[in-house]
Length: 351
Image (cartoon, rainbow, N blue to C red):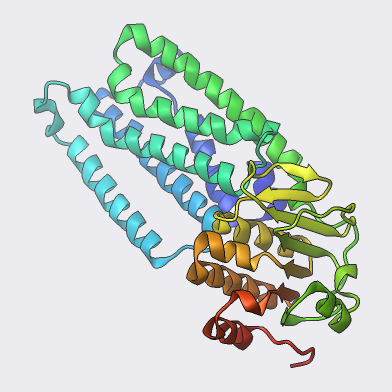
């Protein structure tokens, strides 16, 4: 992850790399004592809980950045509530509040390890759904994190049970190794779906346009498909996809699997994943977006959700100084829906 952070200079990977580094440095007392580094018993509970709270906050914040590109106000509020709760818990650990309970150890570490375990599961789920290519070695990264998170959820209850503790530590080591192997593959050999086009081309035209058919688009912008194009379609291409073209085929087949060449399947209901992929593609060098699957997105998600996705995509394309072409059959829409699209998409070049 440090390599990924250095390579991309992205804050999200910096947060995740820092969290995983702190987690790697976190050591149990039974490991430290043989090295002559004993922890004062009265400080152990707090010293072992602070990293858990810190790691959890960094992982969740990094996961939010991966998922949404930018955080929202509700995310800040949630983190603020969590930080306040963590502070109160640490304060109580410094008192004798928990000592009056029969299972004081389990209660003391219930919140810290729930936060750590849940954050690892959240990050693993986010990576698997928004970043990692499925059915590849990379998938060991999120799967390892999810399993490691599940192990951490059991820590308060199994740590002092001799018959379970050793097995749990062994499983945790295996899951860490799984995550490390997947992370190495992901960091050094990124997925082809995020790869840059072989030839970087300047944008030949900018703007957002709407047409009734693909033929009408070709007449209006003859060189549209000679650019580095991302295609979002319901129809699986029959001919070989050109090297300068990346296709997202909207289908309910298994997601994130290659259909052929530069064709990737995406579920029509996962428009949040699709917008994330497209944002990455635009930043990697693709300068045109073609979409003829809007009607299908509308059927699966409803017009309101589909049009919000479309307008969000349009704004991202225009902010990058690139072009988006929407092909839609007006017979499938109401007059009000058509009017809404026409306000956002021009049907004439230069307007």
